[in-house]
Image: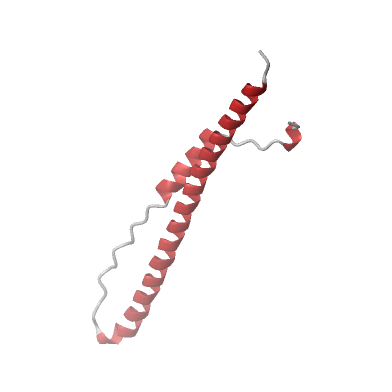
Length: 97
């Protein structure tokens, strides 16, 4: 194979990055602070709670996306390893001893 057209994947590094992403994908939503119940602040507190709920929902989705990328990294490393192994076995079968 022409080295200029080779696509190499560092399996250890790929799996290391996938593990880091997997750890980063863990999401624990923050506990909401106790808000004052003063009626003059009701609109502000309601708007703040909506904003926090929206931020939490977006954070959950971001962490789910990160988990998907981590799984893809693991799958890429596994597929590369399996392909290399199969290609190596096939090449060894063609060699004349």
